[in-house]
Length: 113
Length: 112
Image (cartoon, rainbow over all chains, first blue to last red; front, side, top):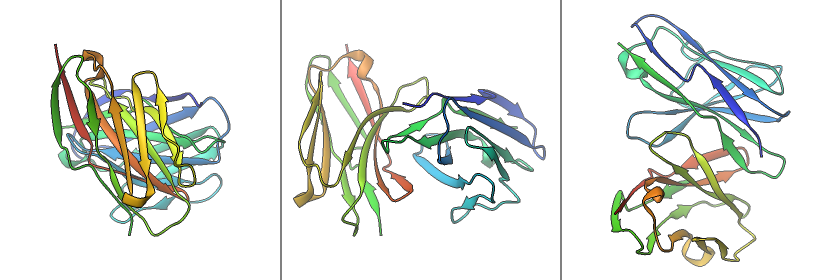
């Protein structure tokens, strides 16, 4: 299995500001993803973080709002830009292991006021 | 189109009862993976099981068991002799290639 850590674990931010979330994995992984879970809802894929190239975004998510970096095979960041209260969610980093199991980080609970 | 349906939004059972969580999926692919995850009140997502589309063997792990039936596109999850610690939201998910799609989840309450 993969051990995933995220920073920060939670934050309260003001409208219009930006927050960068970090994801660190204890082993090299090829596939890394970012998900959002709005209050009381299921998980929605934001984007696939590609190492050395631009992230691949899902419908409804754009790079200007959710810029992603992936400088190596163990680390990625997601920035939530120009935040509004609608961005209040849990943001989760996820990786696929060599045996095709998919693991999730502990999540970052974001509240935008 | 791919889709995962968890028709049970919320279930409450008394401790020690058995409970089955339903999951029905749709996909046109012949190769895919199915997952179950548990999300306790603390919020983390705990991996429970992965099953690939070629392996229809049922699986048992302690009090947990899974029934995969391709003929009905179902991948149901049973907890035997439920405990209060089983209270959580349970998600069924389908992965095709590199994308995983989640059902809406079933919130399970185990009453003491």
